[in-house]
Length: 147
Image (cartoon, rainbow, N blue to C red; front, side):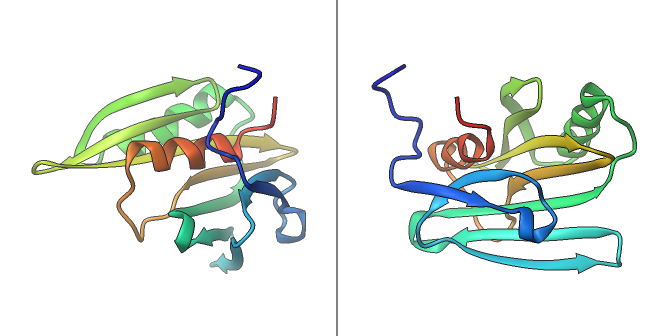
C-alpha cells in the first residue's frame, strides 16, 4: 500500500507526552488538545478538530494487568454491554471498530489500547458526536503507530 491513503493525508504528528501520554498520534493541523484529571485516578485527554470531524478521547490510568488480550477483552465487554451494540466491524490485537445502531441510524466507534510501563492508554472516539465508518476509520488509523 505504498501509494494508498489511510485517511491521514494532511495530518501531522502530535506528541502527547506533555499530557502524561507517551504516545505520538497523527492529527489534523487544526486539532486542539484539552486535558483534565478525573478523581485523581484517570487522565482524560481530548484531541478535537470539529472542521475535520475528528474527536478522540484518551483515558490514561494504572493498568489492571499487563496482558494486552485481557485489556482489550475488557474494552470489548464494555462496548458489547451497550444496549445499542450491533457488531464488531474490525478487530486487531490492540483494538477494534464497532457499530452501534439506534433505530435505523448507525453510529460507529473504536477503541485502541496502548500499554506502557504500568499504565494503559485507551484511545476512543469522543462521545459528543455521531461518526460515520470512514470518520472512525480515520481516527482509528491516526492513533496507531505509523508503519
